[in-house]
Picture 1: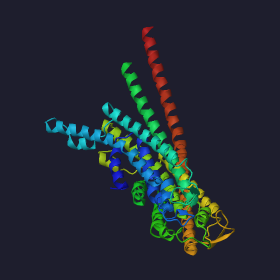
Picture 2: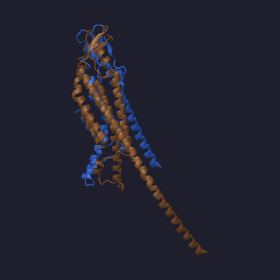
Picture 3: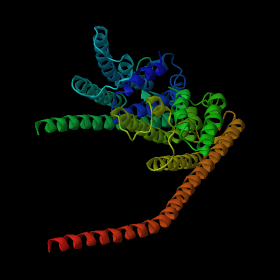
Picture 4: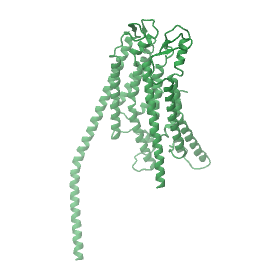
Length: 222
Length: 262
């Protein structure tokens, strides 16, 4: 089970998404997951090995690293990407349930073409509209929560070159130097920018869906 | 999600590209992405580990490495390749949209739709005309911009394309000035020059494709203008003759009616 499997799972949802949803999915896979896998993981690969403290005290480096990096950026991004992708599974489950109902009717003798059933594109109406809209809402919430967690945990989005550590067993205050701080800051800002773009796409999609339902409602009344 | 997935993403676009576009895509995958993955990543693999500074001062090596290599070559190339590949997705989206429209026409039973079944719609190869021409041309334009920007970023960040053997560093906490030695400088210089050369070839291919599309566009326009100039005069003459005849007929009819009534 890896990012490729997630891609396969979400690829199926793509068929029932709006155009904005499809763009969001593309941005997610190419500018976030792919960047994480091919670039960011290498940058953070040696983060503990090359975290150097100016002391000979055994254990000091471990404790300081743990104090300043409770959860590594890479792991936080991986969690964020998984949480942000999973609401789409609600939609996939709803669509599967609808298809299952149609197949049941077919088995009970109603005349439905089974091939058409498999390839049918289900329109975003009725209860599916509610499922889809809730999934977008949850996506936005998860994105915002993770962006805030990043900001809170690392006091902003910049990776410092030097951190001063006075946790036991370090003697007094010890200077510790982070590995590749500039490259890490660059990638943090990049991932933050793409998260921002994804949030805006989600908001746009939400507005589009709400407008669509309001227009349909006003058309029915007139 | 890795370079293989990008390959499958862009493979679909290949069908709707020009011949130059197909060559560009091949050069991108074989001479850039593949070289990056099988060779360059290994050359740069030990870049920080084997970056050695002539000091015992803890932290000096980290700081000097960060000062001289703000973003590693490998990461810059990975970003460059991703940014340069993505405009092709605009074309893929446009083609998907057109297919969707045709499928909708087909399912509504529109008699104008020239396809016999869904399979034909799926396999259809769209010609680069009309709005698709604009999308395709913009994608090539963006590709060129991204390539140029990244090549400039490389040149600016590393003061040229050569990897020096020795760097003199005096950032804190290094005491005074410290000599730091880069790992595998010659091999890195060779690969940097190779990647720059292939980027330039890709830029030339994109420029050639842009010129080809523009030439095709202007030729098509001049052909249309030429055709429309010949026909309308001929058609207009025919129309005016018919109008005159109709007037004569209607006049004679009126005269007959008036003649009868009076």
